[in-house]
Image 1: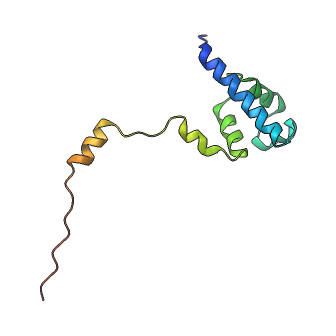
Image 2: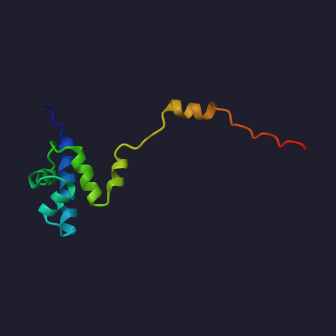
Image 3: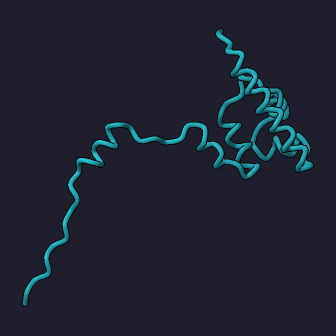
Length: 101
């Protein structure tokens, strides 16, 4: 399996931030694991930065920390060139003239 060192480093840092946040909230590992629906060994793997943890578990952890909106920044929605072109070409609708009595 191909291992990209930069990815591994980022996962380790993410796990360290998760652990620091959990500890700052004074939440025991067992309680936090239960809140996000994982086992203690899975939470331990997340905090170590293991690359085998499902993204769903990370999303659950973000939710439990009131940070789920941070996930949107991972891959923000962007408009394609085609979308931009369609928006510029599309004629604007004109309002109907008022009827004369």
